[in-house]
Length: 335
Image 1: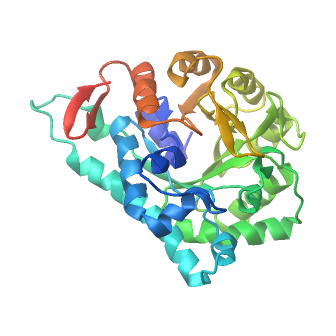
Image 2: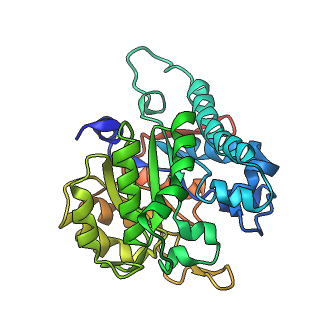
């Protein structure tokens, strides 16, 4: 496979993406009780965004996802910002992710001995520009239902300018994530083909069950449609319960040979109506389940809601073995 993701997978597989942004921002005191959610940190505390990205690189992540899932231009305008201010904040999100990557890379010391490999210096490090669904802008939980309907042109108009700012600011690829609605997926593919043909993206669906998108579209049919799109470099699922992932991988693999990306929640159960969580009833973790998912065909892994740098560190130890070395607070440790 060619492209940025294909090259990265040739260098290291499986690839690991970062974990939850909002969970870590909350720990840093950022108030997200508003329609912008984690994107509010771009206004109130961009340094916290930088620090979260850095913590995930230190934990072993290969890819940082920009803090733009909910950072769209209409959303910023809705709270009274200008178009220019909205574009600047999306650029800030990319700048903080890129700076965190560069800071991490420069902090890694040279190996103590010549010809000694150190995966911290050689492993691929990318920045993916998060493009959340229209449902995230609605801020009513509809990214988990797909219960909205726009025309193809309206979807394109909603996503176009954020994608343009992300591309101009220097992301390596797009992350189309938590997509519950096939019409919106098709509009994003159209935009990618028609206006961003020099970019690639992964497409990650939100699911009703292991075989269907939230809007009822069959997962294998949605995957087969994307299999024919050159710019879609990986297909997967995110923001789903842990127990759906294995069967979803099988469904996706039946319809494509492209890399599969999976990033479920940590097992806690989200209640969209109240925006609250109850603890993981199974006690299972990403690290415990990842070997099964790798055997099933997933080659890009991440944690979504409620996951932490510790989860990614544990995932790295499982995926890459005890030789994976990370840095925490300036101290070198074995994962």
